[in-house]
Length: 495
Image 1 (cartoon, rainbow, N blue to C red):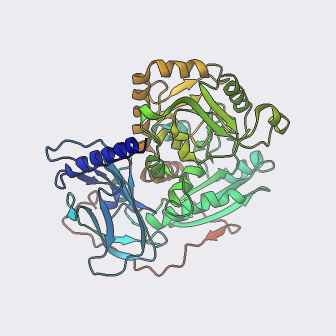
Image 2: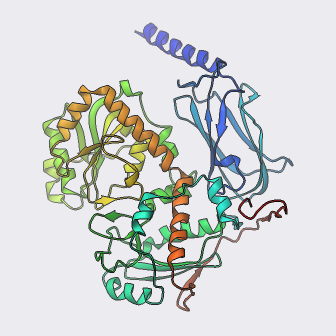
Image 3: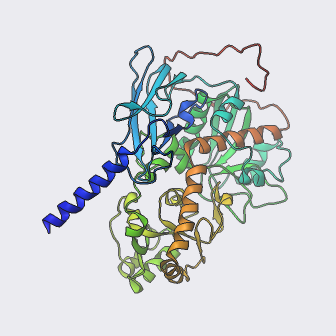
């Protein structure tokens, strides 16, 4: 037995080594926002895709050590940064870095066996640490560098019946209608400074809006805006006749709030390579076995925040050969713990040992959905009245498998997927590819700025800072912000 195992591992290593030896450093491609100075992000990142000597794409796992990524300075100055290169196990990699207390030029080097890859080393001008307050004045340049799309389906929908936002009556109407029973924060951005006043008894979640507002204002000059954000889970605006422009992190079919990316995925962008371990990139490097080796069962773990989750656990008890669904914590249905059982939580990355992921709402939309979609399992999503900012980009039976709201067709859909493995994998790949394109850190921050621009255009008067508002201060960092001089031979649009 030991000889067989040794032979297996030896042959696997030989295959990895053979494929790695076919890498052509000139044909291999490197691209991404980290290579553009104006693409200012909390964590800069780029992609590496291996090609062979015949200029054919390599799709095999090349191992963690096929490429080496280092960061430096052309002047030899010390660059303090956290640098990682994530293996996506398909011949491609994500290089990313978070810089601390640094402002100046950097060099990005990617090598294979000591040889520079593609156009490496890359010299990037005027790069700043995340806490440097050095915003790019030209917002168009920033959005172009991040390759922000020209429009978003959800933003178009949210502003469809909001041609004018009346700032003269905004505060009065919002507080009269929602101020007694809900917690909200009133924000103003004026001359790229952020001000805020909160209303309600529970306002701790203001940090989830304070942080992205300040971070974005350090990266790019924001338009002047004045808006209210709902700090609760449930969307608020129920009147289609007078839809107040309240911002929420989750929408529903029966409400008319303006939707931003959830605080969860936004925080994962801002705290990447910091205080979070789960983000849209870390998932891509921890997708478990290949498709053919995954366990052919539906999988779910989560707390008891919705009756359907308990029903799913019950179905799992009745159909253990098809479904592994269990509850990890009880809060809403504590009396039913004995009936449905309780298990310990496991790492999110271990979810991808299973081929089919069941996505069920929590109190509102399940905020794990983006991360499930970015993995390499087939997502089966419960029909829901709730939605996040990107749901309009995804189509059932194209990017995921839809489930009835009561989940009564779960076992039927799992049986279908097992019987139609090739089609199931096609849907998985389409969903994974889309999620990895539209849920990147750049796209999450692009969406915020696109929202600010659309909102600002509709305001009927200049914004004013109320005397009752608190100014939010940027970190006191001694950064040497450089301002580029415009060249006279370029037009305004080019600058």
